[in-house]
Image 1 (spheres, rainbow, N blue to C red):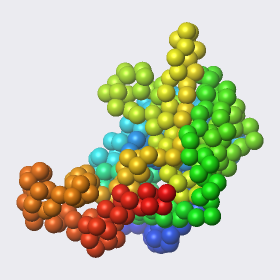
Image 2 (image 1 turned 180 degrees about the vertical axis):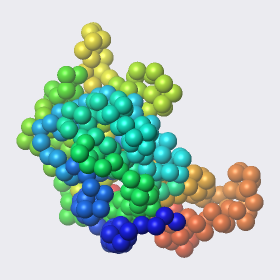
Image 3 (image 1 turned 30 degrees about the horizontal axis):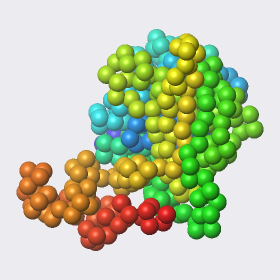
Length: 376
């Protein structure tokens, strides 16, 4: 075990306590970056939550620099770097078991050699970067990026070790916040919500703004958070930028990752409802100026199940088992279909019960598959 100093240890204890304090995900992230700043100093920090199914960013909390220059490089980030560099890197970190990457280590002590340094950091006076994946099993729930000015020291091995040790705890905190929202729908809001059970539509112009929208779309946007007064042109919500960028990347189909990329994500709104955001290319006579349609609306049952099984941290095998249970299969039938022993089936069920917080098959089916239908 690496020997770490007292201020690292104190910060780790504080952050671990926060992760199990039942905070909402935005408050949790703000508290964490506040604690990290004196220990792992940064001049810019971006702490994102992501859709565990696609890895796309659903929200961002920023610390440090707040000016127009950062807003300018955000456009560069999504257009030229996120899908080419960051998302593949996050997936590699997730599967490697080492969830932290330092730019200085990657470039053998010369961050300026990296393409992302030239595109992102040099224009706003920053130099070294450290980035981390907040993960649970094979699911990614958040990403953290911190960068420092050139005059500061490079990020250390101790910094990386600390973030790696905290990553699963922070992931648990984010997952817990999502689970809390799953059960926090207020009945008083049901009448207003039922008026807008229809999906909304945004028409996105390729030059970077919303050309038109429906009233239902505005409803779902407000459900997902506060809207900037100039949201149509200058302050598009980050999840809209994400699905548009994902669509462009998936249509390019230059790599295997592009082909697999789905321009869709799910987020929980302020009233506890799960909302899906999907992008598609609209037909047009002029291929060079095709508009993009963005649909926002209540998640279908399939989306809710996908989100909830991920939120409870079920493994891929446990997800298969719970789906077979929901279809009425007993342990012997599950054993036969999956070619595993009845003992292994029972072991999976025991793990599922512990993660979901239930004691029987009936309860697990009700909590994962029926909860949102019953609420509706």
